[in-house]
Image (cartoon, rainbow, N blue to C red; front, side, top):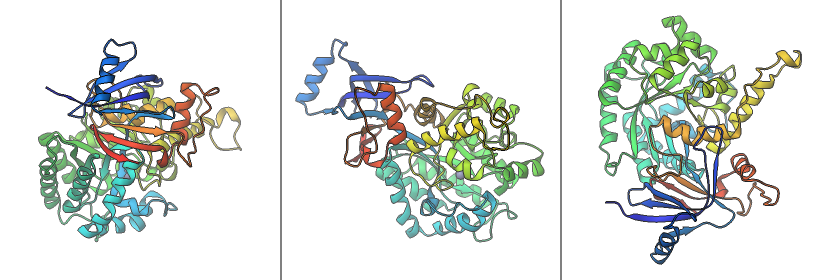
Length: 454
Ligand SMILES: [Zn+2]
């Protein structure tokens, strides 16, 4: 038997239907002692007043002001935790050179537990403060510091999906950042999975291990095979990069004569808990395989503008009902906010739609009809992300976990300016998505636990 732990009274936004939204002006969201939404009441419900009085008498009521909005927690499907120190610099190189010159030397430093302990707490805190209640992380090849990242998520109360990265292909990995051997890496990965599952305080699986081949170029086929076997054994999540750039796509074609999706599928890495970052150069067959397996795509629009060499098929992916959420791709992009990623996703699609070359006539410049809307991007950031991590988050409905934010549009230094007589509910939501920043987020809950309070 569960008991009501607290209730939140006020207005909320969420998106039960892709491309649409719901606004409740005065709702009472009741959260039970397991962090799950027990019920959502409005003034029309018979027990609204009774519940309200009871919660108020027991000091269990959180009442929002007229400038405060309850919103679902944001889901970031693609974060490179060790690259946090690199966020905001070094985006001048194409993918291969960027990895070799900047990224691998930085990731190699995470062999040092003290270094990891300096970086990871700051990252998790920064994401939570920006409203990211669930994050899917690539750590590094080092087992002990990857476990440390999981421990840090638990400590700060973030829903974390953490992968010890695997890379053993000597021709693609520098000598200072490569697994000692394929066999050792697979043993480490299995041990990592078990350690994360058994972490003290993880009885409710707030943090989960993720099988993480970095991408096709960094892994031998023996590694992909071994990781596929671990996935079948533990039924855990999988994350990897998929057809991210011309170089990555061409590498797979040259080595296997196949697309990334086909290769991952051959090795048993495509499941309903697989998250494919980027997925730029998808073929019709890739669409079919992703749909049939129930795998998800992490759309990382800002990073795509630096590294993808082409625009994302976001419109087609949404229309084809593939599972798709958003990723910040820290630090292949610099901004630790999924609100910002929503704006980037819209911008990305608009540039694709119109095209770019002034030397071409308007009707052949872009890809007509390929834009996505703010509501679609916000749906991806909440409901779509929740589907990808296989968690009941993203909606204010009974049975969903209470991962939520209070956004206040009237705080000092806010960029959001709401004019009640001019702004409809939809206008307000669009302004919040577009202009929200860290100072607007006043409270953050994960699984009913208050993890940020300002
Ligand atoms: Zn990435």
